[in-house]
Length: 323
Image 1 (cartoon, rainbow, N blue to C red):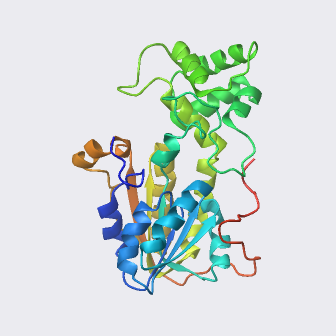
Image 2: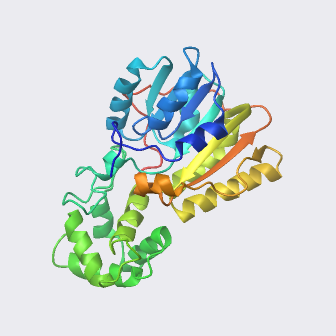
């Protein structure tokens, strides 16, 4: 798959730009900046008076974006943090609100292909899955300590894996004789437990890996915190776009946007989720599960003040939600 010159293909880029409608001098808060592909395209509309605030949990992505933006005529400030920490980011940037917020909840292609991250079973590596180095527990730690019931529930609720109980039982049986420490080892355990049948073209181990990654990085919990804070972070008339890749994520986003509209806090810009065209899926197969929703807010921004400013990257915020 061609991931472009920067190792990651931005999903639904034209739709993101159309819905955010960036203009000269505005401020973008990209709370999952990744390799900076969406932000770099939007920055062209912001110009020298514009500002990009970029947040990411992965220091390697931030280092890459820092170099990438050297030749882009816009001010760019980067922060090492989770998107649930956006109020601290705005306090550190001395901003009460921003004009646009983008949250692409997908994992960067470079992270999927990283042996260090251990997100993929296509190559053997340590069973880590931490996207943020501040997180203490790895996927291997979860497999070693959770009960069979807890593992089954985690795999089922995070990935709708119908063989979750069988897989959890196989994991517990295996760990009695040896630790489960590598991606290949876990994939083989799951495939034996789930049988040779695949979910369409998806490998039998895919859903279990997804469920563990979401648990290690507390993705649904952090997304809910982002959605709870988001209306207070956007300037009057500003817009927010969220791209999700999981039915649980999309459900939270849909419910939040409907709630904001019912409360007259904003207007939904996408009556139905926007999905990639067939041509984009052919070019970037990982985009196939993407769903984009957007909202434009009304009313004054109301960001809490008084919190101690957090340092810009390199640096980071105290770990509050990772464990």
